[in-house]
Length: 468
Ligand SMILES: Nc1ncnc2c1ncn2[C@@H]1O[C@H](COP(=O)(O)OP(=O)(O)OP(=O)(O)O)[C@@H](O)[C@H]1O
Ligand SMILES: [Mg+2]
Ligand SMILES: [Zn+2]
Image: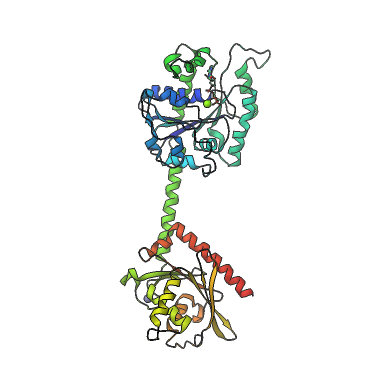
């Protein structure tokens, strides 16, 4: 887990509850209490408070959270600032990111792959947009500041999000903030924090024992002639808030130490397992390939660069590669009855080969009144049918080969024969062009999925053609 960050997100839909104050000062306290712990902070808000607090004088900054969300390596965006705290600069270009930002787990993945270690603190905007959701799901610990009944009401939306996704809510904790201790009530709920805690408990929300007081001194820390924002630790040590932040930070360090596997670590492990499964699936597909070209019968390993086509039967039982020239010659013979000694064979073959190299060819033998026919079709990459020809396979049922159709009959026999050597009923064969430089790449996760998508599309066309 050393290689992965422990993530703390501060979130509340209510504005002005002290999120940014909490996020930025926690960074300072955590770093002060454990100097060797890397602490990184970032914000999805465009108030640049984080930047004003941590930026070193004259520091050149390059890259922001916007670049991070768009896929730039996150670790390269971390700037070491004041108090040795790392910060990723804020951005005011996040408002238009929503449409391009994919999925609620993207930030979890970004952090899992970031190489950032220690603690990452995320300050969010007062809303539950997709970025805030990402920050919530990525967090090992979510702190939700509440200052009054309205902010407490708002919490239910965060809890509901976790329920919708079926996620464990144990990472969520409320923290009463901006508590004015001068306010006292009559009766059981003697003050603001007791009242908030009672209501939180009543709704089933976990609430920290600690709270943060309202302090004029703290409020004054971001109003300075030099435009800087000062930390509580250095500029408000005499306040209750200082002790409260120390306590929260201690609490969080305790949680960190009690967490052997952070969310980013678990996510990275899950990604690695998924990657392993993909590799296994790829290897399994490689193993299932026929060793020989079904047309000429030669071992493909003897002339690996000759592989220009991949075939697969609709029932996925047989698959492998064919030599480019074997398949082109076969098509020439099958479609036009031309063999190498025919007149104009060269020109015809060039045309046939060119078409086959761009289109998916489908061969579908069917028995009609005791003799075999074959539907031959070609489809473009969108699955649209561009060519169709029906052929009579004379002699095929009897196993009689003629000079013209030998190659085709071999191919059909090898690929489609089942019980007693007869073609498996309703099964067809599709031949896909592949890059002779890397024929196996057709079996890679995405290409293979696309190929299957294509198999399904052409299969539907075949079905509807049969019904006609
Ligand atoms: N403990 C405190 N005592 C007094 N004032 C505080 C305290 N904490 C924060 N404030 C003040 O309250 C205001 C709001 O705080 P802050 O910006 O941290 O809230 P926020 O939830 O991040 O707001 P927003 O939703 O706009 O991002 C600020 O002026 C801040 O100085
Ligand atoms: Mg804020
Ligand atoms: Zn061959």
